[in-house]
Length: 335
Image (tube, rainbow, N blue to C red; front, side, top):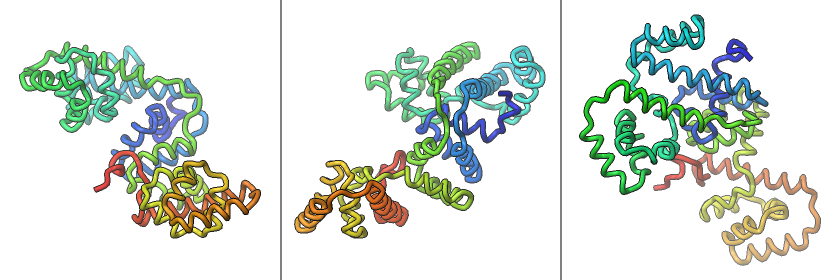
């Protein structure tokens, strides 16, 4: 499939699938609101993406990174000459056009949006001077996270080397950056047989902050209510109730009809039943067990319907701020 066959939004969606849900959620948070909505719709509508197409998108992403470095090393003309030899005149002009407003890009810019823990895994075995060089070019916040994740016995030495570091030759910078870029490219080149779809969006939204999640789902609701509901249903399933704290479970139980609760528990795991019984009174627990014992066989669709009702209550209380559904990132912090 040629580049012309894939629009910009679809390329971004495919690239986010290659990066995986954790890094994709971090990248999405940096986008403008309108772009978040558009790219999320593209991800949801992706189905099977051929390996050839994924490779083309990833190659373009890597090529843009190389082009930025060429501009840094020798200017626009130098970058154009190298790109023309590699990809031809037309493609080189297209890439240079995108980069003209980014001439002052610092080295290692391709690392800026990477997961700090992934960077640690890639550089932890490098010489302390090499690590110091890389950290000195990253944003202070990102460097701080990476330095804290490195072995304790290395941290002071790396900090000292950063403090004493003077000008570094372009040749050394180019060599170190090239090695790191190659390592990161190897990490990204996983052979996914299936990309995109509802499950991909669910994985990303489960890791994004609550505000961005609501913005995206509200927009999806207006454009495709059925898709939005399907995503909501998969974001928090009934068995996930064990991830709620005790106070939240108690709040949820107060909103649920006892018959719906009994039906829902009919198809639940022992862990879920145990958490529910732990958070209701002894008398209520006895009554619930009795109802389960004498209920008899229940159709699966009735169990699933009762569980959906409870999940709906949980999400409503979560959106109202009355309970907390744990997510990745900032939402895991409770003060």
